[in-house]
Length: 136
Image (cartoon, rainbow, N blue to C red):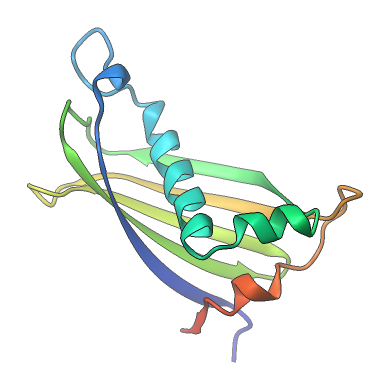
């Protein structure tokens, strides 16, 4: 059996006015903020942020790929489906952003992260986080 495990989480967000570009569309760069927000909301929801800090662990982004499919408009409601996967020392986040009303795909992203210890050396993913995973 593969050592990869995964877990899925869902978040709902809404485009805000300060994210608009000169054409009245949400700036593409904001998609990254949605992905980041979903990830930190997930850690916070699981009660892990304080533990990471207490243990001196840091999370760094090693790779980030985003495929934009369509623009978001002001007040669009967005659903972010986040799937975490464990792969060796890496934690992969796969984000799928869809428009809540139309169910149209907005963007897909893959973010590869790594945990570092107090000496900025790669370390194991915290056991408390691993407990949130399920076998595929």
